[in-house]
Every structure is written in C-alpha cells, then in structure tokens.
Image (cartoon, rainbow, N blue to C red; front, side, top):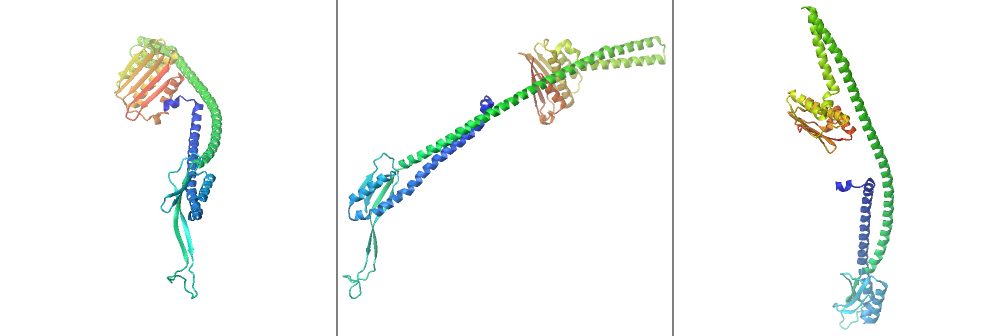
Length: 423
C-alpha cells in the first residue's frame, strides 16, 4: 500500500483524500435511499392489502346473499383497474371454495402472501308481541330482540408491488440524479481546491528546496572557509612558529656548547627542552589543523593512520580498518569532510562508547563513497542525543555534500553509522 501511495502525485493524493470520503457518503446515501423506498413499498402494501380486503368484504355482503355474482365481478374488476397495486382478488364461500376471481391484466409480480377478510351476513330480528302482551311465537318461548352474525365467505386479496416499485424507482432516480449532481459539484470543487493546494505546496516545496540548497551551499562554503583558515594557520605555525622554535633551539644549543659547566649551561639545556616540547606541540597542532598525511596518502591512508593511532593508544578498545577502491582521484573537499566525519566518530567512540571493539570501513565504488563506523559499546538514545554538537556537525557535513547518513543505535546495543556521499 505504501508503494502504491508513494507513486501518486500530491494532487492525486489530495483528490483521493477528498473524493474517497465523498464517494463513501454518496454510496451510503444511495443505499439508504434505496432501502427507504423499498421499506415504503412494503409498509404501503401491508397497509393497503388489509384495507382493500375489508372494503370488498363489506361491499360484497348483498351480492353474495342475493347471489348476484355478475355485479360483484364488476365491482372487483373496477377495483383492479382503479388500483394497479392489486394483483388478484378471490371470493370464497364459507368452506373456502372459490366462487369467482379476477386478476390484473398487466404483467406484474405477485406477493407471496395474501390478505383475507370475512364476508359477514348480519341478521337483525325483533320479537313480536301478541294481544296479551307476550311474545308472539308458536312455542311461546320468550326471546329478546338481537342480531345474528354469520360468515358467508371470504375475500382474498393478493397484492403486487410492481406498480409501487415503479413509482418509488422514479423517485429514487430523481434522488440519485440530485445526489449525483451534488457529488459532481463536490468533486469539481475538490479538484479546484486540490489544484490550488498542489500549486501552493509545490511553491512551498520549491522554496524549501531552494532554501535547503542554499543552506548546503553555505555549509560547504563555511566548511571550506574553516578548512582554508586551518590550513593557513597550520602553514603559519609550521613555517613561522616552528622555524622560530628551531632557531631558538639551535641558539640555545650553541650557548650550551660554548658555556662551561655551570648555571648558564643548565639554563641553555632547559631552553632546548622547552623549545623541543613547543616544537612537538606545534607539529601535533599542525596535524590536527591540516593532516599532512591526507595530502600525501589520500583519504584511505589518512583514515588508516588515525585508526592506527587510536588502536596503539591501548585504551581498552581495539580498532580495525578496511578500505576498497581507488581514493587517489577524490576531490580535496570531499576527502577532508570525510576525514573530519571519521575523526569525530572515532572521538565519540573513545569518549562515550566504552566499547571493546570498533571498526572503520571505506568503499569507493560506482561514484559513491560509503563509510561505516561501528562499535559494540553502550550506545545511546538517538532522540536525546540528536542535538549533540558532534552529531550535528557530522550531519551538516554530510548534507552539505548531498549525502545521506544513518545512525543505528540503542541503549546497550552499540552504534552503527553509515554514510553515503556521491563523488
């Protein structure tokens, strides 16, 4: 899914984020409208069927008593013509034998159920009184006036939802058309918004890229200026200070040779030792400011020299080095930045890692310089240490050269730094 999403443009992503919820809402609306129409049809059928059966049963009493079935057939036929939702009407006797039936001529689908109402014969009788004031009957039994209700037959109505479905379908199509127009308007509006946001985002991204490129140029310029200044200071120390120290040492040596045993000779020897110590310190400072071995042996030789220096210090950690490729044609700017990165990484190993094994590997293949510095130390929390000046400096040097840096570490898990720079 990520790969599929990653191949989309910004505008396509914005359209997807807008159109997918709209499509979901539209489908929900269509489904709800369709189910609502079906529910209305079912409710109307359930309400109309018993009502039609009841009306026909009440109006069929006289025709059934007088056996005027032709009039009853005309009534049923007229009702079928007037109400297209009625599929069939059957009139049954008390034993549920069919007396007559009528069905709609139009092609329709009947319901699986039917609605039935009884045809009732209602007889009202009154007891007549004789001259003596008593009920006039042959058997002289006293009965009260009343009504007798008798079931003469049944009216069975079978409904058809076809006509109602056709009516509701037309309404549904109208709702679907209105919803489609609304959806189309929302999609067009979303397209315009996505277009505007895409243009704004593209402009912002271009501005960020230009700012990032300018930042990289500034970092490279600053690094170059710093290295040039270091080189200039190193040359001044080497040419001026060290030369002066050598001259002072030679003069002190001459004084010591000319002086007899005594205080003057001892002072001259002390000056010789001080000059020699300052000279060695100057040499070490020059190597730190501008490693001569980098110009003489290249990046691989300089890194191997610094790794050998740390390994010979015997601080409880062994250092290994490996290199693959031809480093002789590497640009000086890339070489000095790579050297400083390795120098900072090894310094962090010595100061903080508490490791017993560390390794540095260089590889120059297919126009890419790959560096890997690993150790088996205590590691660190990358989230807390990401603002450290050493790591920030390493990242800035890598980014200034349009490279990539990856720091894989964790508490008590060691550290692995992988750097890739195009050369």
